[in-house]
Length: 184
Image 1 (tube, rainbow, N blue to C red):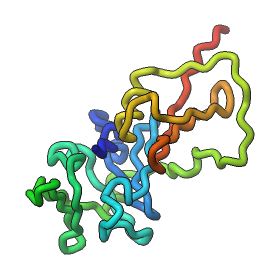
Image 2 (image 1 turned 120 degrees about the vertical axis):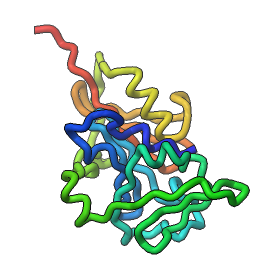
Image 3 (image 1 turned 60 degrees about the vertical axis):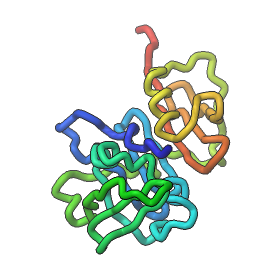
């Protein structure tokens, strides 16, 4: 199941742009600024999908993804360039979502540059004696990435730096922000 919508902002109307899934450069991005998921489009839409194209750049409202149960979809079609349709394994239509293009999205807000917070594999890791994070956010991140917490690889870059999470069975990638609980 592709529950990437769980990584978006679900209720905060102050930051409406974070309630969307961004499709850009061959990946789907979802973030609420505490967790981030970067999923290859082949994982989200299926390896044979016509949507596995790096030139696509649009946004999907996460509550529509959830409401239409697109996380159960096995076939996805871009209908007329304005709508995304999902079919289940039996070919039954799950629903249709209106996509938002980049010019339209500018009226909603500015989506974060997610790749700017992802460290490269060349950055050295640091030994840390204490790391603190919200376990419910880790659980949500793992569910959004498609697996349980035992099938992920966690990389720590320092005490108050992002915790990078890789799914051991696919190319989905995530980030969990740590919490500073140091005493003054």
